[in-house]
Every structure is written in structure tokens, then in C-alpha cells.
Length: 121
Image 1: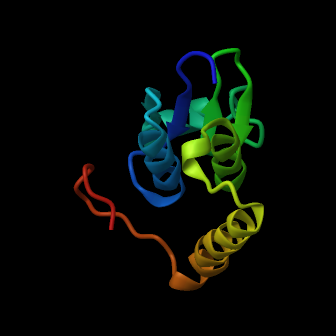
Image 2 (image 1 turned 45 degrees about the horizontal axis):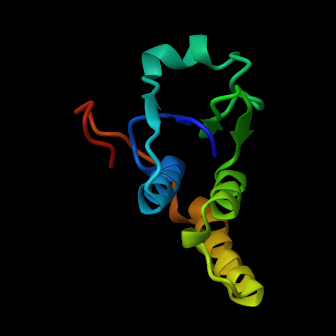
């Protein structure tokens, strides 16, 4: 990936954290654009957000990639250290990751927030 990408997301872990961890593991310097709840309504219709949702990874050329799984797949393609040379092992890891996150995320229960702006619960 040429240049420094920008991750647009809120200031909590949720769907942005796996992306942050992958960027860190790959050694990629990136801009972490933390969108506050006060900024969200104005930012939501931005052309940077293809589906008016976050997380979004914006590449230096202005291309925006939405959806956590798609962003992680892109990062794995761009940075070989994030995946195995074995495509079957990669497919198994991908299915586990998607099951563990996508399938269980909605079953865990609603997300709640602390009154402290620096802490999500």
C-alpha cells in the first residue's frame, strides 16, 4: 500500500480494533481518525463512508474500503506477514474469525457505554 491510510472509527474497540491490530502487526503507519459522537451526524453522509457506516479504511488515493471483514481481507492481501502461505489454512482462519466475530457479535447483547467518555463498557 502506498502512503499512509486513514482508519475512520469511533473511540472504542468493537469493529475497529481488529483493523488497528492488523495494521500494527503489519507495521503500517496510519492515521487513526477518531470520530466522536458529536461529529458523527455531520461525518455520516461523507463520501468517505460508502455505506454511511464505519469502520472505513481510506487509502492515500482516496479509495475507501468499508466493512471490517473486507478491510482485514485487503490488509492480508497487501501484507503477507498477516497470513500463511497455505490458502487452506487461511480459509480456515478466515472462517473462524468470521464465525467468532460476525456470528457471535449480535448474540452477545447490546453494547453499553460508560458515562466516562474515555471508557466504553
